[in-house]
Amino acid sequence: MTSKSRIQNIKGTHDLLPVDTVKWQFVEKIIHKKFQQYGYSEIRTPAFEHSDLFIRGIGDDTDVVSKEMYRWTDQGGNDLTLKPELTAPVVRAYIQHQLGRKSAINRIYYMDSLFRRERPQKGRQRQFNQFGIEAFGSPYPEMDAEVISIAYSIYEQFDIKNLAVRINSIGGTEIRSPYLKLLRDKLIPVSKELCKTCNRRLGKNALRLFDCKNPNCQSILDEHAPFISDHLDEDDLAHFNSVLSFLDTLEIPYIHDKKLVRGLDYYTHTTFEITSSSLGSQDALCGGGRYNGLVEQLGGDATPAIGFAAGTERLMLVLENLEIEDKPDIYLVLLGENVISTGIKLADKIRKETRKSVILEPSRRGMKGQMKEANRKKVKWAILLGENEMESGIVQVKDMITGEQKDVPLDKVVSYFQL
Ligand code: HAM
Image (tube, rainbow, N blue to C red):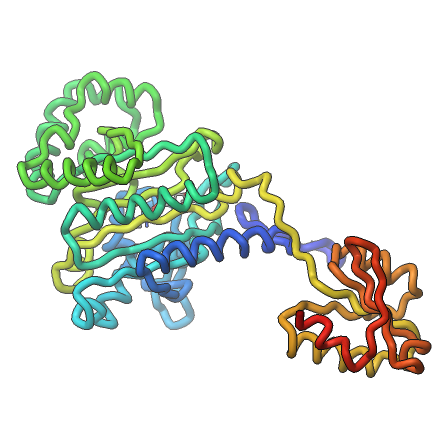
């Protein structure tokens, strides 16, 4: 690299410029509100954790752990990883701070950046953002329905069309090993037709087979594989049916997708995703499910839990026509060096005593240049303060929408904007 070459952002990361962040803030504010409306409180966890948390939490045969973690050993010899998802860190914090002992039910939400070394494409970055929730303490189907309905109502509120809720149950751990034996028995005779990854998974983590994107493997599964949701025990089936009936009550349409096992190992019982056909190949707006064993597996008391996480970039992709602009209220046009001090004081007072935003001219341009800037910023008012105004004690306030101009005494400007 020569000393003059420009440094660019890293592949798979992106900058959010001010024209973008104004939209993000608008969207995030609605999501904060929505989560709070259901009684969820925000958590913020560190950007990196001990690698072991993810290996034990997510499972070492998942794509996330086996291929995608940004993992390194620091100067002190600690094996660390930038968080690729938030369920494991939230569970870690839940156990560490004994939240379950303080309250039987904990409803927690987050908005955060995650890191996965995936192949970048539309809707898939190496640094991306998620908003999501984790609900601890209830094993009952109404909690599943609440979690799914929160995700659904966020997309509904943004008026997103072409939504599909895909839902499945993969049951509790008790049914897992007899089912996996059956699955292997059915697939081993046709294993030569399956891809290399499926063959590896067949031996080690056969449920993951359903995640394979290879159409040939999918058609072999269609033909030969038994589905786990057809092998649920009585309680798990009753739980799943109740979740579906609560979704009916809430008028949330869904598809029972028997192949939906999700790509992380901690799931039990309900799994779900919401997809949008407007997104292309990366069509999952969000995904989640129950993980009744994870808290105990990571060293806490046995605690039922369920949650979801949603990609913020994917939401922004479907909202690409959203038009939100930052429009400050007032542009303070300053004409002449002698008025600057009065101008700074006036702007300060308006900001403190009214809730209006005020931009101050910082370039000492002429009147025309400043008015052009005020127009470009789409402000509602311009205040004109020049030496004549200082002398007469009367400034001009221009309504930039109607063009109407008013004389306002300098000492009445603040109260003028208090209206
Ligand atoms: P996940 O399915 O890995 O689940 O991710 C959830 C969502 O994050 C996806 O549906 C997608 O919208 C977004 N996402 C994932 N990877 C990327 C990426 N590389 N670029 C852009 N967006 C991405 C989880 O993370 C679980 N922790 C969800 C959960 C919470 N389950 C229970 N509680």
